[in-house]
Length: 322
Image 1 (cartoon, rainbow, N blue to C red):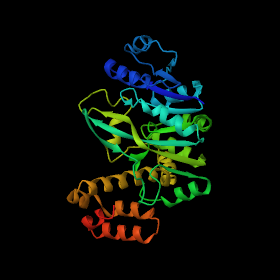
Image 2: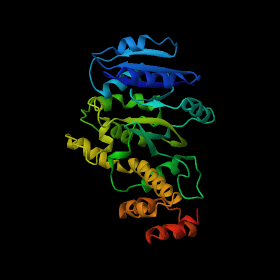
Image 3: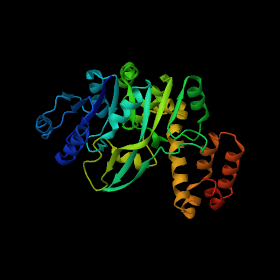
């Protein structure tokens, strides 16, 4: 079994690109690193050529756009599974070992893992998948077959573009490859990651959530170049999708993205409670966020009591039940 790592690159600053590549190469695992030069006009080729590692494959995609770059990588890859890393981000060297540890026991259609945000160099928790659901559920979570289908159907909450990313998922190549013609027919101003997950997840029979955070997602709000692939848009509340048909397609599959919405809301709630940030929690726990938590309530008496305490803002009592 082989994992391929695809890095689309467009005019990336040298220090950031080197940091990205070197973080991947720190792992001693057997993987394939595909560095896709997406019609860059700076010295990307020279930077790539400076590395001597037989795990690296250098690719060139003349048609600009991150979708074209990652499609080139998928079609050229030799791996059974694929992960993506943005060229100014970096990963923990344990990622490959932990993915192989899961996949060597059982093959999954998708594995999701956590990430940190680095905003102007300051790190905070972007997403953490520890204690994912209510206390009686598994901290590292898997669903398959009908259980997975039912799980998706339960999470039909408010549609939100903020929680669909390709870079914190490990995808099965056979499924990804089948979607390339569909992806290439679309013209994206943004939202390509969300669209990918919307058409990918319905084809899955199972999913596994790793509890650790392995990905470091970098945002430099002062940079003029950080929006080459529109990385800044993940922090905006509004997405301007010009293709109304694409928007409607995404809305039809909104339940899928709510997997990520639930995990974010649940983690934020638990984290604020553990840190006794009750005033912040009161502001955070809006009606919509409460409903997201309620949808996956496991219906036990203890869970119902905990949800009621959240609804009544009795956070101190709730914290004693953790």
